[in-house]
Length: 470
Image (cartoon, rainbow, N blue to C red; front, top):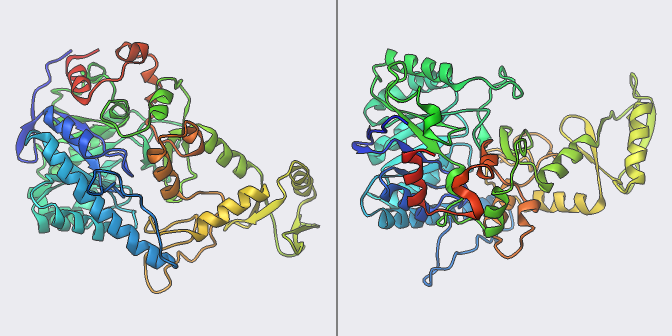
């Protein structure tokens, strides 16, 4: 393997390896601090991070507000408190080595308020902000206010060009790097555009070369590009290292830090990672954000797939091929379907899927009464964790605080499931009942000899392994 040399990032020389910031308490201050202490860039999630009581116990994020707006204010307060706590923990753990970054989702509810609150309450503890899931135009402005470097997460040269022209050229000196997140291979939410086919992955190399070419037009020859998504062994990326077409390159690891001793996820989750097979990670569009996302194809995802398959179009009157009347709901209100679709609906009802729920696309999905009750309860309990949510129709924009559409029962409450999976240590079935994000290389844990016999390394051991090869 080629020698891996330090890279200039955020004003100091660091190893060119970055911990990916996985949201809702999965990347915390301990894992980020240990990664930075090993000489790289540690990243904690500033998305509803955990905070602690005086005894060190995690404070449960329980909501008491009667309205969504009241619960949203509680969520913002929890997020700021937790982000400050994780920044302090990462700073203390790193012993002043490496860099500490905070990762924020631009489409998170109250994102600007949250990152302002964290940076204000954790002055001097955070060296950089990484930000994706949307087009974070105001990221540079926030970085300038607090004098920290910023690292936008993009998936194409076109996206970076738009950000640069609109805002980033005004704060060029604090642009610490650009994270290229592969939209087909990365875990979590993916930046696939409408023109890109989710079933036809493109090689990242020409896309990143195009990004560097765009950056060079703006004089950003020495600004690092951080490759994220699909990175496992650095020797597989030897043609990227010291490549003059690419310039300074670092590599981001999101999935591999999950399987470390410092990782806060449950033992059941870690053991499941060791058993994944190729094809077990599923690129789907169920997320209430509207983005594609990559997750383990567990029982949670399968239920969403089946829910969406039990779907037929309808109309409120007899029109065109919709000639058959069908009663839905307790009052058996009439809707109209095609004869073939009514046959399907009747078959689902005989199987117990007797509740028909309307979607914003003039379709009905058929679920059990228990599923319908759970969906409605989650919608009612919405706390506004996203700037806009298709599942609950929440929007953080006044005066209506709604996205103007019907709530979509084909999606799910993302805050609830991510909080549950990371905090439910006692129930091993939590990894089947909840969303489990993963990069598409997650299946490689089972085949990599480094993890043979169920070995789980420390962060330090993982970093050493990455730097020395297989």
